[in-house]
Length: 83
Image (cartoon, rainbow, N blue to C red; front, side, top):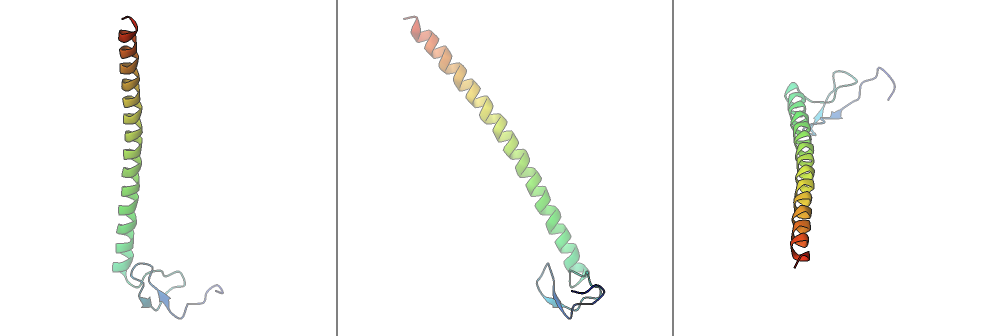
């Protein structure tokens, strides 16, 4: 698209509805859709941050479980080796 020219019509990035952009960089049909898209994006970012924290915690838990199991197995082998 040549610079400075308006699109004849566009699709809203949030609701998908057609609209007449008032500026070449317009992406949403209304302030409501712009705000809803922002809230949705923020929610998704929060979910991704939480998922990353859960994955990290699960990794730490798995490491600890492996260590405990290893210790218990070693202790059981030590106990049975003396008989």
